Length: 213
Image 1 (cartoon, one colour):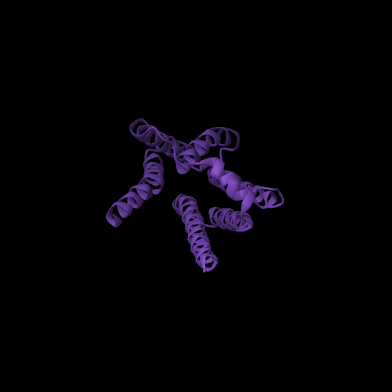
Image 2 (cartoon, rainbow, N blue to C red; image 1 turned 90 degrees about the vertical axis):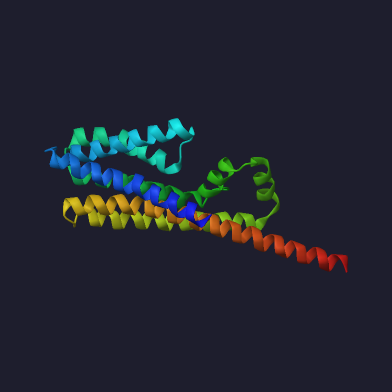
């Protein structure tokens, strides 16, 4: 089981880091301008994503980000012609999402609660827990705060590195930071949610035992 997990992790790293970086280096060796080499690398990632979709008929969160990067990359390249702006635009969007997550903490349902509800196998059960369990509310506010901090930190660090590192190193670094942050936040979300569910069930079982006595 663990072998399969590590294989999937390795493939994810190759697809989301190795492919775009390798394509960028290839295109620059062929004489492409850096900004168009970045757009071309994103295009290669889209082709890889299309092949995956034909096999699995599903689109992952990372896949959605790949599509968004390519869709935005072409007009940014046409308007600015600047490779660093092309790199930084992804993290400006990341920062905006982090800001939106922070603002959503003021709403009845913060961002991560809405996302997990939409992805839940049984949305009605999620809604029931939301109505009946105050701890469930607190959990999703904590999760949203974690995403706010994680996405905001990613945006600030990445943009600083993009404008201080040599361009090729900035490309490699940016390609690593984005998927690494996303995978870390997803893993943290699932761990915190499972820990809450386990603790909640154990507490419920103990209360039932006390009640039976």
